[in-house]
Image 1 (tube, helix red, strand yellow):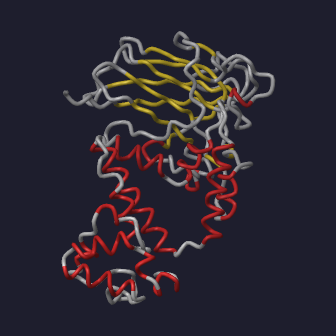
Image 2 (image 1 turned 135 degrees about the horizontal axis):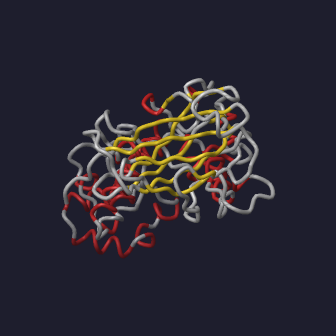
Length: 354
């Protein structure tokens, strides 16, 4: 605990401490005397904890709380530095975060090399973030955090439309279109005709609901990733009519890989996980008096439904993407090639009273 010089000359090592000890309680003075003599002031059980009932171990003076910390006492020491946090919720979150992080480090006995690799991973994750790519959100997605937060924040009855992840490709600068508009932006692909209806739990139509739609093309690219594509495509804002209906024409989306050229890709590679997301159409629905719904619809025949790397698939969101040959089916007069029809009814949950 002390150097040889300090043990040999306690009067030089801590004259101020000696003066304090002479005025302290006898038990504390005895402990300090043993420490200056090179002895351990209490008998440790091997885990860094002082014996039960130790005055120093259980009630350390605030000014000494940061000294001689062990792998166990450091947790409470860190939390004690936050005791003056004014926001109670911030204090609650930070204390729980510190306790769980410290418990994780102790549980796996994290080495210095592993700690350094973790710091490097997080640093590179931040460096990958740009105005069009959020690697930290992607990391949250593949660790299941995004869906966990969503599940806790959006507990709804099973008969209402369930939430899923927003994803990184939603844009505020999307165009508003009238019913039945073509939102493909002229991009090639299998024609998709979408028919949607928004209702309440009783089945009554919800008129004037705002419905955002966005999806990928047949190669799995969103408009922001299509070379040479400047204007928004495969995305739009609609309003439901008095029957709760909205509809549009676009192109059928495809399954696609999440970005694998960054730290998150390394993580999935190290754990032998798939990068591939099943095909889907994103929707965000808002209506006065109802809870907002952020969701997506997956084709029932997609081969990646059970390996979605962001855990966004729910049984109630899997639906039939009906395919028709040219000249057949309900939209035969609207296209001269094979096409897909997607129909779905979205059920909104009332917003809780304030």
